[in-house]
Length: 258
Image 1: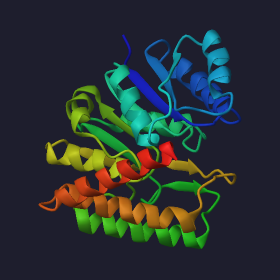
Image 2: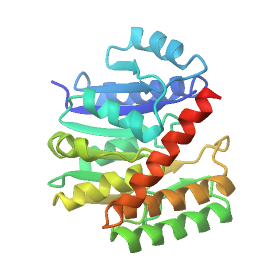
Image 3: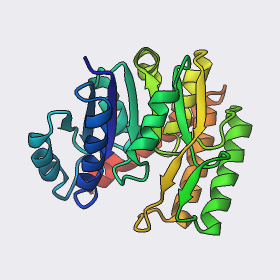
């Protein structure tokens, strides 16, 4: 019986994912033995991510994978993984290994009577190395304030890539999940809270990747627009989002024909 399912979305991660998988299997082989699984959702990679994962999985039966083709974003890949895994507890981490395995295990140990538990880089007791540049810290806190105002979510950090949920709660709300870009984590937490599920937040250990491809000057506007779009979706102005989606689909179709 699988107690814990860990989903890892992977897009062009051939250089980092094996190290992450090795650390996680070494740790959980000792802690949970054969009661866990790691499921990698390969998202239309252009490099050899699938090849290195396939080689690793041959030697580690707890590691499974599926190439879901090119999907919209990380959130869409996670949704595909959530549909497949069947652990009593289902969570996810990033392929870069920013969350060490013992920190993810803390989520599992502390979920208690809650339906979910999320890692926070901004609570007292959290450890984040190296210290993020000032501009990223300012952007993160401004984003959090916006989320709190628009969605009344009481969390210090909705965006950390380490979260864990009980199977029943997650599977129940899966059909409602639709936002797969920057708004995915917010959408996930917002839907769970609307359903009355209790989500706990705990301080975590986080090792920021100095080679991260995140460009804050590009990401910040995208994050802002994504949150506004999500808020409109859960309002009487939902039709605005529907019009926007149709417009984007039309533009994309014309682009492919050109």
